[in-house]
Image 1 (cartoon, rainbow, N blue to C red):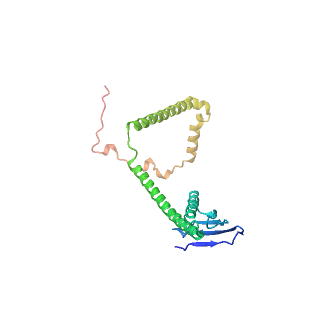
Image 2: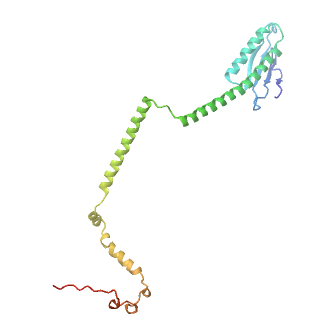
Image 3: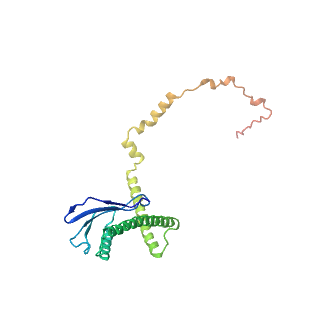
Length: 226
């Protein structure tokens, strides 16, 4: 992991003495960092009184993180009253920023586990479905019957409308005068387009037909005229 960084900016003023210090955390799992710039102002009685301090600027900190840092500064300043304390205050903030980076990692891991758990539960529901109770079955049955009834109504309406629009044979001829000549036109078109190969047929004289009288099994039946 990267080393902690503490940057001391030039003194903002000398009377009273005021300056800023920028503190950056160690790099997190994905090299993310959090940063806080602290502004300190010495009072006339420092270090017998706490210096004025504020969070001048910050990067990647949540509102609750800012509140925690300010509370930490107040606690450390009170505990170190009467001693030179800037280094102690900055060191405490440095440790806090490192904790925040670790918390970000932990929070991401928890969020990942939660998503995996939700996905697993959703997959289980796909296989097992929702347990059937009397209440949800009756609710489903009511909805199903209503949908089925609506489908039947639409089908009856469509059939009724189709029956009204259907024309009888007489009505078709009355509305379309081409129908009475369509068969004739069809026959004329087919007749003109069909060609007959006469070579496929033979003259009756060329056919060898057995004389029935020469057939030994031939036994004509004589009908009684009476």
